[in-house]
Image (tube, rainbow over the protein chains, first blue to last red):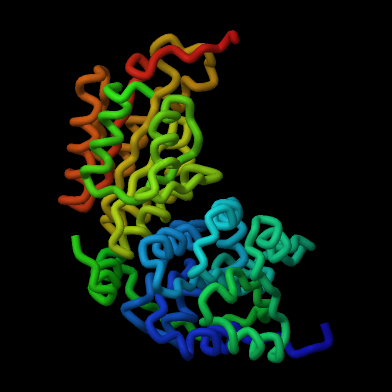
Length: 193
Length: 172
């Protein structure tokens, strides 16, 4: 590429720094560690499994809480496993859901094997074709800063594919207790029942 | 649709139980419920590309305080297996209404393997399972399943038997 590639944790920090009351669903593996490292909050739901489900969990949350910005932060392998969800989300167009794919073109958790996105597949084009019309690809710091300016505006961004290098920063592990995470999250939102 | 049909009774039970979101993959046996959900402005209907999308959909809705329910055919239960670990790990309340295939008067033998294992698969994944054979049981069983799931934070499935749904017309 000839340019310095973006660092995943820097990207997540830039996107979540001004998150206010936004809620975040984290895809398993590195995205969960990244969000836990730079933006820990009871308004985060950390997945340690259910691969392919992060975007749909974001959709359910976005439909239940239409006034909140719902952000899904996930990896390219996780997003590929649930690619059909882009069609489902594109059909619904919730307006308050932003899916951020940290694309290092590799499966980091299993030993850095190449993913389809390193083999010519264009996930952002898939998202656009599925009706996510505010989709974009970010490859440079300039792209990232342009995105940051509008990221939290309602409906401004529905899908972002961010090209990041395949460095793995130190792991920051949030709770693996999915019940504790659920109860704390619901309490933070003040939902009952 | 006949307003006093068992399907209408099931839909009313769903509404009375506070369900606000219904995720589904199209299925002939669920056609009446799907039509109702799509016409109802108070229900969010989510057409999914595969049944496994429904598991995180419902979990996400519950994180946001909304009750939901899934409609699928028995074949779709097989598509959900790993994703159901989210329900079990997080003790998310979850209700699945399953139309059964591969049993009474089945025409298509390809439906038999999954239809024969649907109940066992759900139970292995930690779900409580109720089976409905008669029209008079349908609405009450669905209402009980929703109460059970949302009062006890568990997964509950209601299997609507092929005998209840009726024979599928294969030759048109």
